[in-house]
Image 1: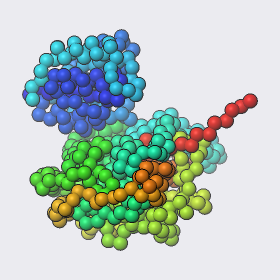
Image 2 (image 1 turned 135 degrees about the horizontal axis):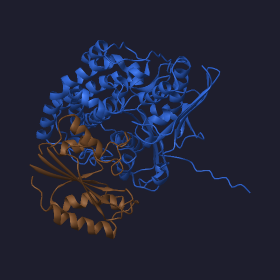
Image 3 (image 1 turned 180 degrees about the horizontal axis):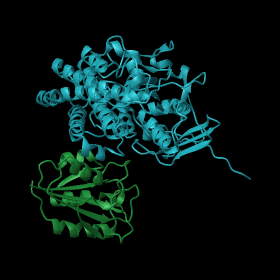
Length: 140
Length: 430
């Protein structure tokens, strides 16, 4: 079973990117979840796709395509500090508990503006459309 | 012990953003600061002018881990101002909702933030590699707590179903039945979690705390009772300000709370446990004893056991409430706006959370005062660190730093709550 989860915060500008992709393709949209919630959301999946915004210094709107099936996400893209228990931690927690689906693909949309407002920037809007077409309609 | 300075720029595995600074001189601690640099958030200011029915939803946003506590303290304070009392099944439903929050907050802290310290792991992920069953059990318990909050509160984070007078919607019988099944399934795991914490290695430390908590005549406290201490305090909630005062210290964006005589005091699970131990069901007292706890606990490291005992209590109390539940006639009691001042205090997972509101005849907030538990514990945390450092002169710098960080985690500080208010005073140098 293929599960797509979009993660983000709809009140912080481009941080809503993952949510918008999930909504567009009929996936699961999780608003600022902790690792336990992310883990629960992919229960039963054999193929997992995760979408989130990132801030790594790359050009806004660029899409990082990663595979976390066998190794952790690079920490320059998804911070793994123990203060924020988010996407990278959920994957590693799942891996440690043997609850990681066989295939885990992660898409990071480079954001430009994470200020306190609703609405994504133009570059991110384009990236959302690109990923929506690429990821199509998810199962389950 | 030679002179040393311990500095942790950014505390890990605590909710919110803070740092730690300790300076010793000649074997004594010269200075201890819990640096709260998370930005202040000004809730008490922007609540002014809001309509009373908005208050529970606004204050819930002070914290993502303990929104129910803010909602409960706020509705009780507003109802006090309005002369409204919520009793019977609505009161039981509020306790049920609070059970859910205690479970998810305590389990999150005990297993994902605190337990790694005792077993030498840098984080819960490393812990889960060697102890997957413990972490999976914690995830199941946390999920049960989340489910209570979703069923009774309408949403897992920042519940939407709480209002002055009760709730917007009553839970359905089938929803509560499903919840009961989930809770029964984790009850034994909760007991096992208590016993597991009893096996952890705890440093020796006993502190003569000034414990402060709610005390109710017949139940372990959530939303009602008198404010009591182990040093003779016994007052109604509305006399809070006669005994406690908030002050602003330079190194913290969170106000410090202390007794009016200047003394530190301690709120939270250890305080509740000390002041209400005999009101816990026998099953919980037995589990505590089996894990090495007597009727009181003055070792802050052992707070992990107390949190697990309270988690077991919350699961059993939730089942009890569901079993006796009969739907009331209405989801809320009517409350007409009128001018007044009201006080509310409830036991958040981290300790007493005090709210005071002055409302006008239209039901709009004129003044708000909110004192979270972590603000109230800051002075105690700093004093405890002082005691810990002076008691362990043989630890090297790395060990001491690690242990001090762990010591802060004993208190499960919620820094986002503590920084909700700051009085801004600007000085211009000419």
